[in-house]
Length: 191
Image (cartoon, rainbow, N blue to C red; front, side, top):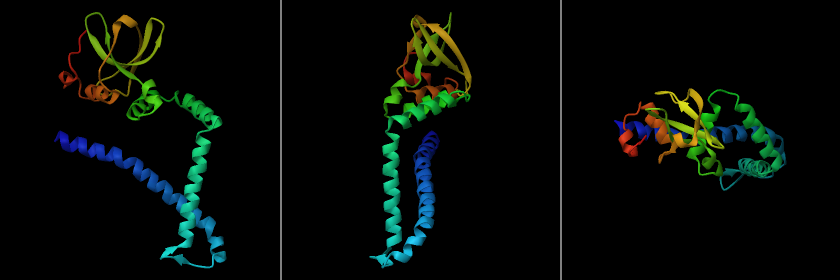
C-alpha cells in the first residue's frame, strides 16, 4: 500500500508542473492566435506539409517570447523584483517553510540555504526541528508541530544544543507527519 501511495504522490508531483506548462502554453497559443488572425490575410499559403503556417508562426512567437522572458529573468532588475516580492511574501504564515521545502527539492544554489533538519536538545529530551539561520553562538530554529509540520514555533538555542541530522528536509517532514514512526530508518537520533 505504501508503494502505491508514494507512486501516486510521485506521479502527481511529476505531473503538476507539466499540466501547468501545458495550460500556460495553450492559453498563450490562443492569445497569439487572436493576435495573428489579422496576419493570415497576408500569408500566401495556408499550410506547409499539412501544418498551418499560422500555427508554426505562433509556436515560433511563443518560443521567442519565452527566450525574451528568460533574458529578462536573468537581469539584475528582475532578481531585485523577485527578492522584494519574496521578502513581502515572508509575511504570509507558512510561506518561509513551504519555500524552504520546495527549495530543498531543487538542485539550485538556493537549496543549500533552505531549512536544515536538526535535532534540538532540551533538558532531558530532543525534537526534530529545522535550522533557519545562525546568529553567533545561537541558532534560530523552527520547531514544527506533529503531525502537521506546517505550523509550529520559532525558538533560539545555543549552538551546543543543536545537532545537524543526516536526512533531507522531505525525510524530516515525512517523519514528523508519521509522528516519529520509522525514526530507526534514519539511524541513531542521539541526544
